[in-house]
Image (cartoon, rainbow, N blue to C red; front, top):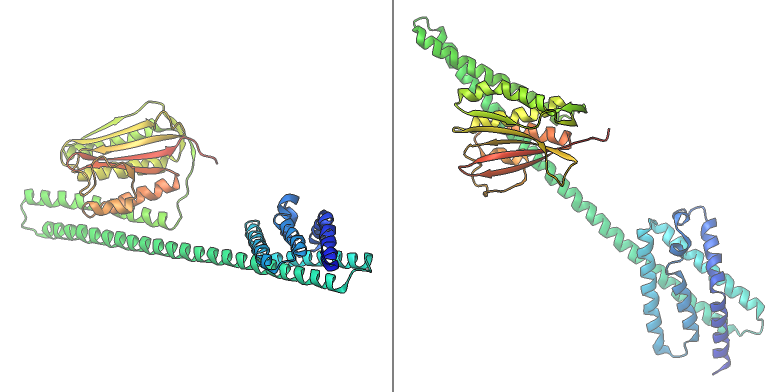
Length: 404
């Protein structure tokens, strides 16, 4: 082994014995730098991740005498530097901090080489020049690979944000289309009912109409005026919900009288359609909630069932959801109507009202959209179960308690 090789080996041994000192000097330099703030929150082990391997590669390079072994060590250095960039990305560093931190490491290693040169005046110029060249190459590779890895991750994150924005924009556009469909449907229903009212009014205005005919016109007029009143209420309610002007008022409730009184009020309408309306649930059923909005949800579902059921009737149930879900209670409205066309039998799934209303004839969409919005406001979920020719069941799951 030549004298140069011996000097280089001695320097490598010295650096190995001083590795912890160099690391602590680097750590102190990082802590002192006012622009390197992210590392302050890291424990010592995470701050030093991958840095010792860079110093180890430097020491190994000093031992190497064969040129064909250099690439192996350089590849290891590249992997270590890339890992450093990845680690710093996950730890929340910005790009400037990554490069500045490695620059501080370079300063500490150069200071150690200068101190070794002063302490060993007999050291040949070639040995120290070789050491500086090797470290410069390793440090440059470290900064390049670390920054490259960091930049790639930054690009991936930016691409992810673009995809998220595109997805959000598509959802907004879909919601706008659904909203436009609802308003077109409301306008259609209003025009239809106003047309009936206008015709009935013309009939009443004819002085020659017989009394039985006048009675028929009066019944038609009153029925359509009532329909217009409900429709206008629904349009106003949906507009308030979409504008975010509805607020929930949570308080302890007894659910039973709320549903009983609602069913008693709707039962005459069901009987006019020759339908039964049954209510079944435990008395004194306590839960937190907004009484007005729970009633509105149940009312929309029941009226909707009355409208589309031609034989049989509607059953309303409430109570505990299941033995394994004590945190929620359920409200279920089941009809014996035609079911939703093109829906698979026994399909129990979360149902968005804006999707369901297209399955039936015009006029249902606003009511179910109101139900969906009210459920969102009360942190409730909607489940639909339907079978063609058998009937449809809406199941609403409400929280039993709310964190105010």
